[in-house]
Image 1 (spheres, rainbow, N blue to C red):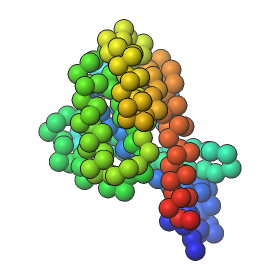
Image 2: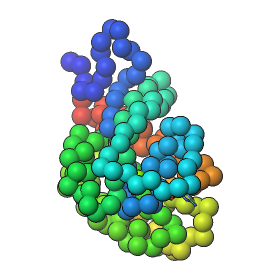
Image 3: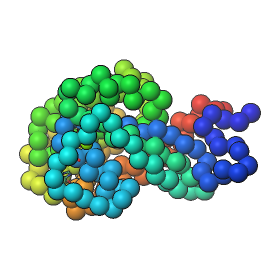
Length: 185
Ligand SMILES: Nc1nc2c(ncn2[C@@H]2O[C@H](COP(=O)(O)OP(=O)(O)OP(=O)(O)O)[C@@H](O)[C@H]2O)c(=O)[nH]1
Ligand SMILES: [Mg+2]
């Protein structure tokens, strides 16, 4: 039997699996910037808030498999909540982003985890502390404790400098593939 999400057509063998990934977190934490840095290698210092949702497509090679990630860049602003919820459907991975220089964005992580749990269930996820180029105000010990409580892998990134900007996606990909293969066996 062909597993779900495995591309079995003869003329489209360019990837092994495809999966939707959602990137969530408070407004202005750098969700769009991280994705654009990863997918396009670019950085824009001005804040252009995301209206509703955008998506990007990126292939990731993991061993001898290729995962086509459709990365859904959601809007952190409260007023887009109802729109955002529609776009969680079918997501197989989540990247949870806060801004290390903005404690409130870290305190709100519980809200984002609850929303992902409610809308997507138990999908693989990664915790990202962005803006590592700025002075970190969120205590690193608090982040480590939260990550271990929630069983989350934690990555510090800077979309501005490019530091670790591909890591969240590369760390997530093997877990997504494992989850797809697990479900199809
Ligand atoms: N110093 C610094 N600034 C950053 C970094 N990443 C993003 N920014 C800036 O932070 C602001 C907000 O970034 P966005 O990527 O638009 O934030 P967002 O999370 O997508 O915001 P919403 O779409 O409203 O949810 C912009 O001015 C970015 O240039 C970073 O790593 N370091
Ligand atoms: Mg955005």
